[in-house]
Length: 121
Image (cartoon, rainbow, N blue to C red; front, side, top):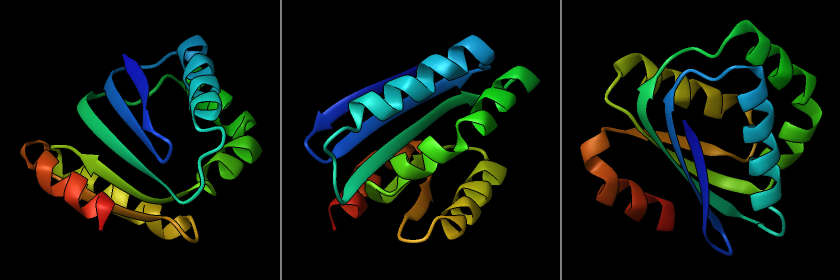
């Protein structure tokens, strides 16, 4: 499952759970792009409930849309990732280093209040 909610004019909340196949990945990427239209200096809150690596087909879809995803990421300054997996926390923060202008910080899932405060700071 992957749910994208536009909270306000500058924030998206994303809930991730389970494994994505190629069709689901295409839908998710379309939804991210459409729900982020008009956002500048945005914030994202990712809640990673139960993460599984996407299928190879899903990864292929993601790579095929890399240019549009890079454009999407330019609309955001900060992303908070809620996860209880240490390796996902580390991977999230490393990913933040790959996107100039985007700061990513990982929090435990029980730190949602702290993550939201950080997004607003």
